[in-house]
Image 1 (cartoon, rainbow, N blue to C red):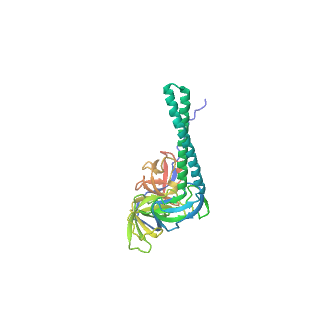
Image 2 (image 1 turned 135 degrees about the vertical axis):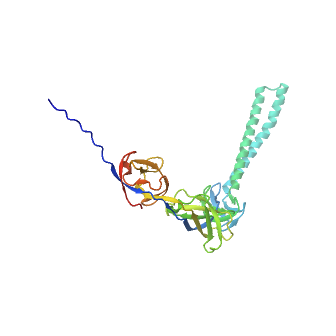
Image 3 (image 1 turned 120 degrees about the horizontal axis):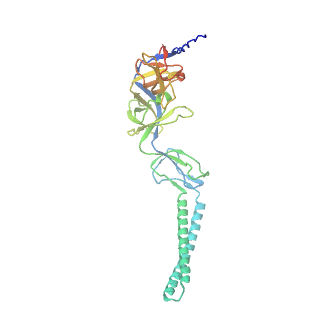
Length: 345
């Protein structure tokens, strides 16, 4: 009689060894940033003709001060004057047709009332009058368009300001909308700074910035961040930050070099190796080893910034948490591990 061997239960695998760091939050010191920039007008307009033509005159150069309505430039108006003349002739011809059809319609209307003519003859006279009136309206519209285009051969300043740049020279053929001059409007000025990527993450709209002329460090005014460029400059890799200066003194002229100084209050942060970050959900996560059962679980975190080989966290983990820093993509929720501490960066 054969003996029955009892099946031995398969032993569970040993806990996986993982490297972890113990979280130790640090108080960051007061962050400061300082850099140079230039004064610009808040509103700058590229001014051009509404029609194309050959440039015959440009009466302003860079640095000129203009007022609204001042003549800036002209293009050759010969063709546009000819269009006006032709349109005037069309209006005269259409008006003559109306002058001829009007009494004819009135006469036929009277004869119809007297029973001398037929309704078909009257309706023909009425149709002729209405057609002449429609032609007159079309000719008048063409004349108005031609007169407007003739006016557009003169480029007038749309607002008060300073000419900061000029485009084509006299003799060149320009297209409609092409920049002839650039005008910086009078009014509020702003300082524009090129900020490095590691500093731009601290900036936010409404942030206070102290600004002074490079040659006058004692004359300090306070501005506020109005705009932060969403994309880095493809050449320099920096981000443009515009600081509104509503109370800028007169000596902060356009193009003047200024210095900006901003301060960011410190706070609690945690630095972990970049290998600890898990990017599988809607927001970054890390594996935290729970105690005392040594099981891992995902924990969502808030990233302040990404450095070369580490990330700075501001929320999601607490003092004493054990965060896995290697092999994060091969773990599962609730998996038992054997944590091996390594020194934090």
